[in-house]
Length: 110
Length: 113
Image 1 (cartoon, each protein chain N blue to C red):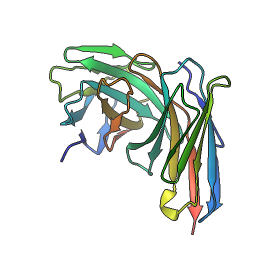
Image 2: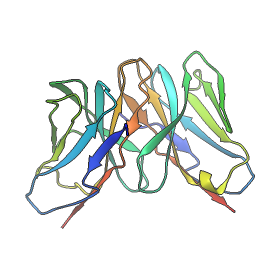
Image 3: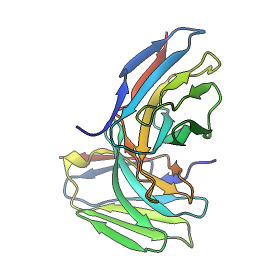
C-alpha cells in the first residue's frame, strides 16, 4: 500500500516559534497517530486522534483531523531545541496495521 | 525495565549470507511488527504477527522471513534473496486494545559488506 504524504518534508524554525506539519492519508481510518523519531533511534508515540474527533491537545501538541479531506495536522507550540526530530503520521486501519507517512524533519534553532 | 530490545545495533552482511535480527519484548503485547526504514523515508511494513505461531506479510515481505514461536520474540531473517538489504530495521509491538499504538525498539542498522 502507498504511504501517506507529509508536508513539508523539512522545516527550520527558531526556538519559541510554532511548527506546523500536515499529513494526508488514503483510506478509511480507525484513528490517526503522530510519532517522533530522534536521529538514528526508534519512534515514540506522541498523540492519537480517533476518526470521530476533530481536534485534540496534549501539552504543547495540537492535532486536527479532517476525515472529509483525509488529512491531519500537528502543531507544536513554543518549540524548543529538544523538539528537533522527525515527525511521522500513521493512519490506523480497522485491522491491526499502521501506514506511515514519509515524515517531516524539524530543526529548531536555539 | 519494560520495553522492546533489538539486537544487534549494527550488523554487516556478506553477499549470499542470511542474517537474523533479534526482537524481544517484555510488555506482554500480543502483536509485533517489523519495519524497514530507508534514509530520509518513512517506515514500510515487512511482516507482522498478531498472535503466537501466526504471522502475515506486510507490504515488502520479499526476501525476508520471520517466526513467532514465543510471545516475547519475533526474529527477522534477511535472506540472500533480499538484494538491497541496507536499511534501518525497526521492531514494534502493540496491545490488541483497538488503538494499535505501537512501541518501538531502538533499531538495527544493517549494511552490506
